[in-house]
Length: 73
Image (cartoon, rainbow, N blue to C red; front, side):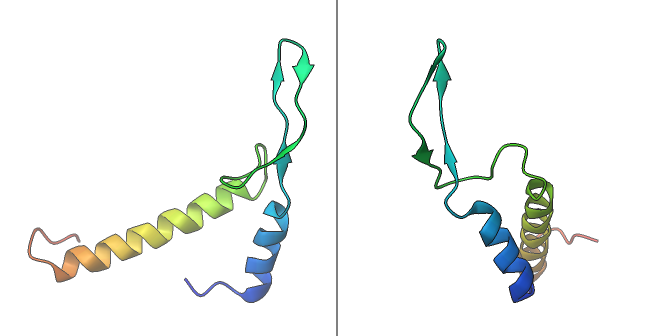
């Protein structure tokens, strides 16, 4: 998608060293690193999802148009 390096750095910064805790029965766990996903309530999450969806759509459309099958208009 040719995102600018500055934008990519901002996205990485939002998710670097992300951690979480679990609350169960009033007890709170120790923090643990989150390696997958986006932070709950993160304002950037919808942007990341939109970029991902656009990339998948463009990729799929390109692959489907070059294959035999029903064209997408």
